[in-house]
Image (cartoon, rainbow, N blue to C red; front, side, top):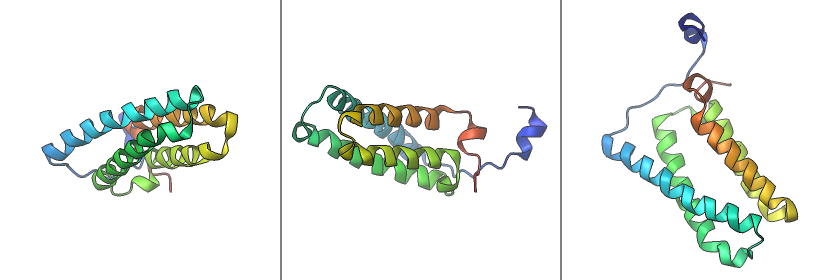
Amino acid sequence: MTKKEDEKVRIGTKRALPPAIRTGSVFIRALHLFPASMLLAGIWFGIPKSELGIFWMFVGISGIILLATEMFSHPGLYRQGAGLAIFLKLVLVSLISFAGEWAGVLMILAFFIAVLGAHFPKHLRHRILF
């Protein structure tokens, strides 16, 4: 994408985070991946839900904190590509309880969407969709 084309793309605004919050956000993101990975493995290998409860709790808590820091940093996140990726991921994860043998596939799709939403180029992640 040329610079002239890039200027035409409407990208959401970003607030500067204090260094401590920015660093904390990176650590929370890393801590979010561990229990999420354990859930993926547990769901894929058919571990009983009762044994995965602690991982669900840590994924939920770290996810809420991550979402709060992202919403603070990008006030219009819900209107951007990254916000759409978060919404799709939450929908997929919420369907896991009802998915039966498809639960592992839903979790893999959630991971895939999360990685794309976090690593696509800025002009795609933070493009204002509506």
